[in-house]
Amino acid sequence: MKYSMMTYTMTRQQGFDLAKMLDLTVKLKMNAIDFCWPDSMGVPATDLRKMCDDRGIKIVCSTFGADLNFPDKTARLPGIEKCRKELETAVILGAPVVMIPTPSKEGLSSKESRKNWMTGLAEAIPYAEDASIVLTVENFPGVDSPFVTADELLEAVKKVPGLKITFDNGNAFSGEDPADSFRKSAKYVVHAHFKDWDVFSEEKEGYRKMRKGGFHVPALIGEGAVNQKSCLDAMKKSGYDGYVNIEYEGNKYNAYEGVKRAVEYLRSLEDL
Image (tube, one colour):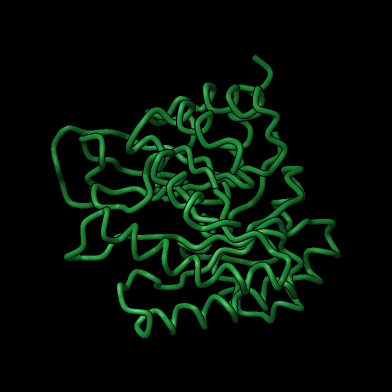
């Protein structure tokens, strides 16, 4: 399996160092990166591209936020404009894929948010096609999330021609078995995230309520409840040849150490 650095994993903790992150990417022989919110890196996209090129790192995705979760077209316009600008950045980076996270919104049901997102994504797709870039969405966790299960993602793919999927095994786990979720949606998966959760039956501060019940707290890949081996096996069997981001939202480990541990763990599973 091909693993990629996910800048979100690194930037969410204090002490982020762009050059150090890129050097770690090379050291771990990942040689690929997903720039999440690239304008937050502190340098222009042209410089990011050069820094990666100089190290032999392939930019495989650009992730950005754009709020399209409105029923009114006028309200969606700022989000559509954000998509247009971020796609221009992705062209500079040379990223073949972009991803937009699709959170829920207070006061809206999962179904209502899903309808809004699908309408907005259909409006954004032409800009992605003009840029020759693949637009994706992921499984997104939470009881009211619009896209948790494979069926919900497949509904979007059907209603928004050209839309593809970034498979997130941890977020899929919040609603269904992640390996089954991948198998169901594999035809449309072009990128992936791996992550992990600790699961609790009672709510506490910082716990996130999930669709299939229970409350989840971020864990390092290999230390939580997600069956990473079954996901790897399902992806290999399908012939998936894309990249897998290493995502870590916890603070038990420094992000640099966490990524190292996670990559080593996943590679050890592949040897079994």
